[in-house]
Length: 36
Length: 361
Image 1 (spheres, rainbow over the protein chains, first blue to last red):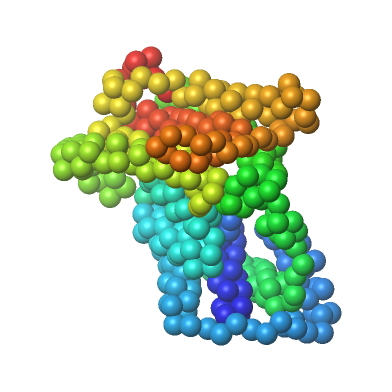
Image 2 (cartoon, chains in turn red, blue):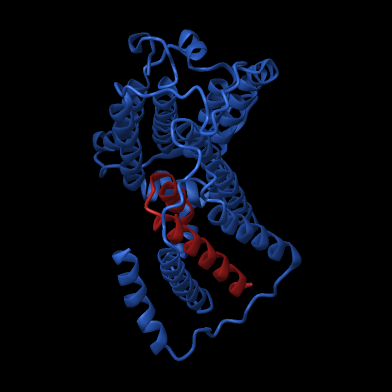
């Protein structure tokens, strides 16, 4: 359970960071939302 | 990017020096529902990234993620957070949809494959680091300050909903700061958008014209009959907040969602004809109520933000509890409604062809 929970957070962080690194306003906003 | 690399390095390095990632606590068993929820969440997150160029799809996938997060909060016994997350999610997606109307519908393909590879590397690394830290933390026994709040919420704050008592009582000053930030953010958005001459697109990026039929009659009639019900629900959530999941912040968001639905169903003109409210004043009133509730305790010789509560017997209703924190919560409620609606109205006002003076924000 803990592993599942941690990996969910990991996926969200990865996707968020990737979108932030796109450096276009809209993906960055999406990325920040997902990151938070 | 540099920031992420620095975080990756300094947070990742100590992880290698740890002997055991798994702590001493016994792991809880996995069940089917949690796995399915987690799978939906991951699929949503990955789809957001995969289709990030088609912005509408990306946004829709993001809403799946938000929904699954609020389901997770419910599952792990955090109903207050779940309610907040659910309503915040609705407002966020609607506001992003509205902003998307003015933006290109697609992100151009501009990163080289090298850069995509590099970014995938950085983000995957950071994801693994954060997941490992999280895993290491939750598998270790933890002594937190929660016990203090659990023990003192009823006796010290007069409410059984510990989350709400923390918000309006123990950490009331924090909440005051938060609603100030919310108000400032809303004012900032208003200030940025108020006189912005913006090109209003009448065709989308592929040259298809936007639909002429503006407000669907079905939605309009249903949303109108839903408004009083939604307001009633928000009052209910507000009043029970001190003892059961709810409170001023959530109730404010529910009210805001109810009005946002009216905006969607009828448009800004229709609303501003019927509901001539100056949202800036509402925000000011909300913060003032919260502030003066805090100042009020000085008159009784108590420190700033001391709360008071007592129980009264009222005929036919029975015993009810009155708390000064409730007044503070009204301030929070009003600020949240004002700020959310002002952001929406500022964005919505851009779509009007009427002169700016006639629209009240």
